[in-house]
Length: 233
Image 1 (cartoon, rainbow, N blue to C red):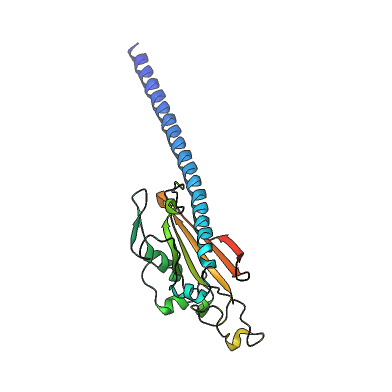
Image 2: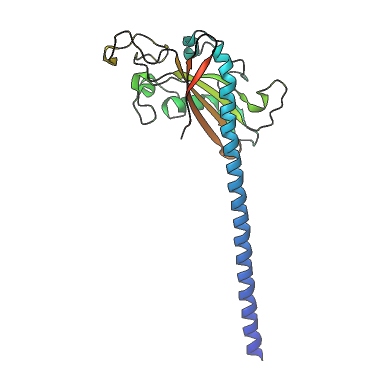
């Protein structure tokens, strides 16, 4: 009888261990599913947030007749929340450094970029001397995007402007400068005249980050048209 009681105890312990393992697996599965759903929701919201600042900035870009002033950083959007540098704290307590974001866009590193860094040919920036030199144009909390404060979002958004890299003037701070001799075609033709590159970025909770790259062109004096739009890697 005592030996049978010992076996029963072992069986009971094995059953409890199995039940605990099943319970742990269920908790882990539920937690993982919740994180996947949360990340999917945040990723989708980040894409919409980046697109929102892109659309908002187009109004200010349209009102700027001299696009060289955009490329130099002399003209900025009316949607800004201070200087175009420094740290901003997000809703979840994490922080982003605006200067580091611009540096990363310009030379794939958070520290300040030299001219050589920005002119370097890389997989992401293969145009050499015509690589865009991104300038801050619009930045702030998405919740402040409308005067009524009707947008309830934890995301921080930025829009950077740069010269169209299809130009062949070797001058990313001028829209449609004189083309270099190796450009080909007619000597006075520059394919990127009146074309601007835009880079919209959205930052949110849990490290969520989305980037949209777009290209726009003047469509007369009263409109711009979208030439391209894509989510960056």
